[in-house]
Every structure is written in structure tokens, then in C-alpha cells.
Image (tube, rainbow, N blue to C red; front, side, top):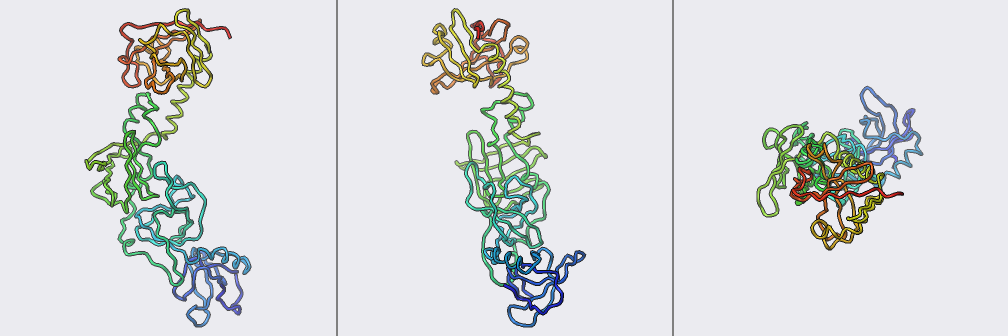
Amino acid sequence: MLLALSSCSRLLGYGVLLWSIDDPSVAAGTVLPVHIRSNINGVWVVSAEDEAGGKARRFELPIWKLEFAGSRGKAEAYSEAFSEFASAYAEAVQDGLPIRAEPDNNANRNYRLKLGQVVKVIGRAKGNPAMSGDSPLPGEWLKVLTDDGQIGYCFSYRLRLFRQERGSPVAAPAAAESAEADPKLDLIFSTAWHPEVYKEMIDTKRIDLERFSASWGFFPGQDTGIVRISLPKLELSYPYSAVAPVRDRTWLFEGSRVQASLRSDTVLSVQYIDAGGAQRSAVFVALPSSAEDFIARETERRDSLFRSIFRLGPIFRSENYGTLAFTSEGGFAWTGYDILVPSIIPSASKGTGRASLRLFLSDDLATAYSGALSLSFDPAEISSPVNFLYTLEPGGLRLEYLPPSSLEGVLAQRRGPSPTVIFFSSAER
């Protein structure tokens, strides 16, 4: 599409109009001759003939409204490639919908759309899908241009897509009424919020990986318009249209049953209605580093302790309690343990299973023992592991049975009342 007359004066080159204009009436995708670029005023001077009729004339365009291509051939090629999106626009149906630097939920946010704000769709992009819990949301990443010249990527799930061949689309009235940017609300959206108990685990350096997961927390869903609360025995999600202030540092996710109060920059209180209709609340915290980092550190701690046991063996023998052998992957096989059945080892046990170093020692126990070893016996129906205090000795491995009454969560608090002690000699390799 080329509307300017070829008789215009000396040209800088050609470009493609990205956003339709009204005066003169020119559609997006039109190839326009470019005469001047003014960096001071931030405009192109172009010429075109009004599609409604009339003489060709020169006029100014904001720099962001035109893609400068150089030659006419390059401009026409760009226009052809752009034709799929020339009439494509989108309206934000969620206040605060982010435009990101890359097609990824974790990419930097360049811009926040107002409810009803219109953007120009200028392409689509491959990227990581927006997620609701473990499920990808329907939609795709679009490359968009805002009505004040910002370019980035927005997921289409919370956009209303439409086409307009003529005229310049305008924002819905609601967009003009949208609240100004709120740094504290931005903090809620930009922070990873996890259950309050995580902080206690980190502070005490006793991370229970069965209760510490990156997938549990409060997820405000800025890209998706779905606020989600995920806890070990709870999974709730609610769609919302906007986030409105209720009072200082408290916001309502409109259209949902969720209200969030920022107690401090690292503590968030969330009120919600559960599936039974009862009012509930939960507290979430910001961690000093990612949950994945703490999981990796705890996993390495356990692996390091296991390697110490494995290097001492990996096969250990006892005259009365049989042979205990470990594999490098954390498995074990124990034979000849009949004397411990069923008082310590369940009668249904097959003698094989997985070893872990999931427990922590109290200060008193830490002075006398190397650690605590948990053996989870096959079959899987045996739900509780058998736990032992252990000591690495020059000639072998000493185990001491640790009954459930000696545990407080993952903390081995005290020895058993009548401890069973087993010494295994390291077998020759």
C-alpha cells in the first residue's frame, strides 16, 4: 500500500505506518515516503494522500508510529509481512497487565497497562507460556506497541483482541480513571511470596524438603489475571479484573474473594474465602534468596552427609544384625536384620529402600553423633521411615535406634529411653 505521490521532494527513505491515523486518514501498514527525521521534536515528516480523497501533503508522525525501512523495496516487504497485524489491536481487560521485555513471565516489566487501554499488535512471539499453577493458560505472547510508544510483549489471555481498518482506536473511559502506579502494589507483584513457615526453617537452618517447595505460596498473577493461593493441603484460584486499594497498604483483587495487606516489605497477610465459604487468612514472606536456592543447599547438605557414609563403606557387616549395603544413588539393601523385626523394622519390609539425611540434631545430640539416618523401606505402603542416630568411626558405622517419640518434626531432640545400638564394621572393598 503506497499512498504518497512520487513527485515529492528529495526523500530520506520509506517507512511503514504502525498505528492508523485520522488526519489525514491513513491505515496501518501503509508505506509512506519519509522526508525528515527530527530527533529534537521526536517526529518523522512524511507525506501521504488522504484515503478519503484530497491532495497529498506533508505532516508529522511521532517516531514510534512508523517503522523506517530505508528503501521502497524494503518498506514494501515489511508492509507485506506486517499485513497480518495491520488492523490488529487489543484492549487490556485487567488493570495493571504488564508488558515485559521478553516473552516470559519472569522477564522485566517495561510497562503496566491500564484497564481498557488499547495497544497495537505488531507481531507474535515464541516464549514460555503463562501458567496457572501447573497448567499453561490459553493464549500466546504478542509483541505490542502502546499508545505512548512503548514496545514489549504481553500474554494474550487478558487482552481483548479486535480489528479496526480505519481510524485510530482510543482507550475505553475506564483507562483514564485507572489509579496511578503504586510502588507498594508493584512490590506485591514483583516479589515471590512463600508460606511463613519457610522463614522459620531458614532461620533455624532446618529445612524440611517435604514442606518446602517453590510451588507453594501466594501468586498474584499479574500476567494471567488469576490470583492463586497454594499450600500443602490447599489450592485455590480466583480470576480478577483489577486490584483496588481498600486502605493504606491493603488491596482487593476485584471479582475475587482475596484481599492482601502488606505488613512490611517482606511480610504479606492474605485474607480469602475457602471452598466451604469460611473466611481464612494466611501469612506469606519474601525470602532472602529464591526457594530453589534453599532447596539446592539443603539437598547438597544431605548428599554430602550421605557421601561420608558411603565412602566409609559402602558395605557394613554386623555379626548379630546382618549386612547393610548402600548404593551411590542413595539406595540400600539390608539382610539378616530379623532380630529387629517387628520392634524396629516393620515385618512387611523387603530389606531394600532409600536412605536419606532428612533429620537434624539438637545441640546436645550434635556433640555426640555424626547425624541422623532415615531408612525408608520397600514397599511404598510402609509410610514412615526407620530413623537412627549414627556415628562414623574408624572401623565402621554405629547406629542407634531413634523412636518417633524422640522427634519434634525434623529435629532429633533426644535419645530413646532404652536405645538399641548396632555396630557395623566396614567390609573390605
